[in-house]
Length: 421
Image (cartoon, rainbow, N blue to C red):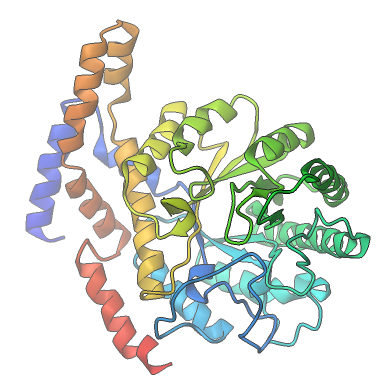
């Protein structure tokens, strides 16, 4: 280890120890907390079902056309391996969507997908020592009709997507069984309308019926964790989305499944950090899709913000790692895609480390003693603690580049690999 870094870490370790925090112990713990890194940043949410890259958006839109987008599953995995080499931690997962199966561009119909299409992904994941999550892709398809899938009033459309949802759960459970790690299957649909819709209640009743069919079959939680994800609105769905947070919380509680909180799917002034401790007493599973909303509901690259740190603090303070599953979700085609994915994953890891380095006992004692001055003063002074030195040490132990160094790694990869595509 670099002597300068080592000295900086030892000084930081001593400083945190003054407040009862063992940095060595924190690093041991954080290495074993899974973070599910989404993969669809790398191919602009296109997937490998068809060789035709000009697919309809159907509820998903990426902006930009930066050079170097992966064109096939081999390039996709190569890019993922590069990202994994830049993010610390020993228990990472890769979040797939079902359109990213190993179809070789020959999938005639989305409902023709089967467990065999993910065998090579399982082999790849085992070789790279990562877990796998897999979720359905209710978009970019001719049967996203008039803005609806599972909530469509047309039975044919609805039945098609119900069947698709069932197949996805079967495949996800298969992945979990083969990997011996529970596979999270997260259901998000784009259903909604651009303008005033008097029949919202009809669509929501239909959605409930569709979900009831999809979740009728039970799978062991050792192989499959089901979650449903809400959205406030989206492009072309500005008036409303059928699946609101209220709808899905109620549904998740009624079916004993999980809820997904996407930090880009709420009103700009809503704090997801406050929702976590509100849901923990009632739900067994909360899946986080960590993105960044800017002015409106959106999926920008995750950065180290106060809210991201607050989200991690809520998990740590509640000791809820058995219930809260951490994942990322964003896509931005205006920049180097490998770099963007690495920025987000590293930001999430940094926020988690900062939260775990918090002197919980000190803060709790002040709070229990109703010493609200000290509580706030400690929280304020903690902001200038040497978190960065502990982070650098964590990166060193994980065998990944430190801050600034990793940027050069991405630029080198762009020059040697991405620019030649």
